[in-house]
Figure (tube, rainbow, N blue to C red):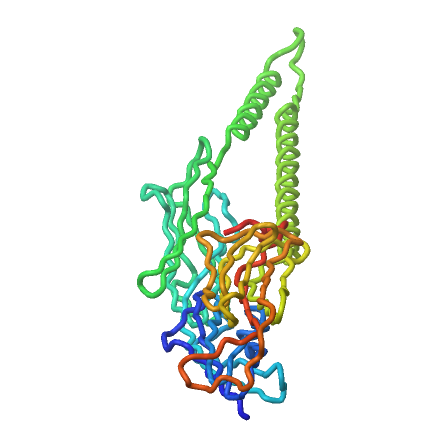
Length: 433
């Protein structure tokens, strides 16, 4: 007996980062109740857990299961059609299998990340900076770069070496930003001006970064004091040289001008060198901290979407199946899809840890969706319990397909598809969004 299955995906184009729900239909054309193992194949199997659990189907009937998929927002996923499949194999006879295929239409997205090499620089006549442009999208983007001081009265002129750039998906480019001081300052305090650099594409998307330029005077107060002291020393030495001393002939005397002024200049140079070394060390420490943070995030446990099936087949009594939250994680339970069959007196119970979620009759089973996500802590279980009445008898013949009403089986079967997200207890990904 062949196995028939169909995989359906909406025709709408899916932009990377968005979600799409595929529908899988499975027909049971045999004479017995069968359960089917579902496995996701292709790239979507890398986006989430490929094991979709089991699906029970009665003879002559078909069942439907929803498969939510989130397309990753990556430049590696190019626009076009993405083919994937689901393997459906019989639990009674694994040789009976079907692999329906479907296509996901992947759309385009454009995302550009500009980053300046330095956020602060200075000079007396000119300066330069670098901006790195990274195309995070999955298609080529045509960029136009602009730069100008934030204050229109700033004595600066800025320009970029290349005003138009074309970046393919995942490509980077480094562009120089040049500054020229139009009105140098002879004396006074340094002035700081903000300079903006913007990247535009598609005539509507704009990303802007700013950096500070410190315009330094030609002579600082310290240099002016040193020059004044030097001139005063020269004048004093000249006066002493020309003035008579004692009553005899004037003798030539020399007074060195290399006094306090040289010491001040040497001290200023030492202080400047010490500050430069301190800034260099601070920049190196900041760089090392960023590397350590990036390494910690790379090693930290990440969130994992969950779709786990609890399967219970009970006869003359009660039995249960459960899922235990793994070590280092807690579960945010969002929904439970129920598929059940059994006599009216049979019941099923759902619990999460010590919290009862729902109790219902098997013949009136329905999906469970809480008003707010249920939190299941590390080591706790999500349990499906089925209580089947005793003393039933099995019918002599299976229910005929297409008869409209199915005979009440003495076996009690229930499948609960638990949907949620496993979130780490610690690390950068531990906070609930």
